[in-house]
Length: 128
Picture 1 (cartoon, rainbow, N blue to C red):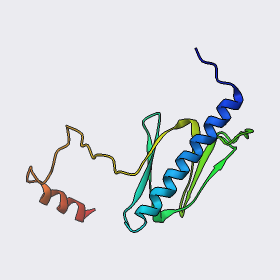
Picture 2: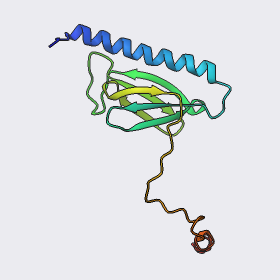
Picture 3: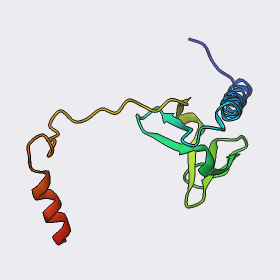
Picture 4: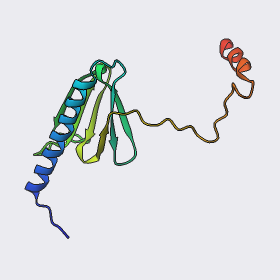
């Protein structure tokens, strides 16, 4: 079993932060013309957040965790948009992607158009 010392852990976090940031910057520069360009931050619990390039105002790192406790090292990533601020723990980030995830529908989904019920649904919505 390999033991990772605190200084090695700090270096690992710094390298991880720099790598994520450099990938983001490089990809942003090459995809800046695409108005729908987005990036996705995947977390190790299965959750992910998607951000459009033109909506992100600032990306930075913080020594505060999600509970408001301050640490000696950077432990979270802050992404600021016009209407929200996202605080994501660096230890929770699994990967960063630049391709839209596949859209998968629930197998129990009922398509109202195929069942011929779209007219009823639209009439009901107009009444509301």
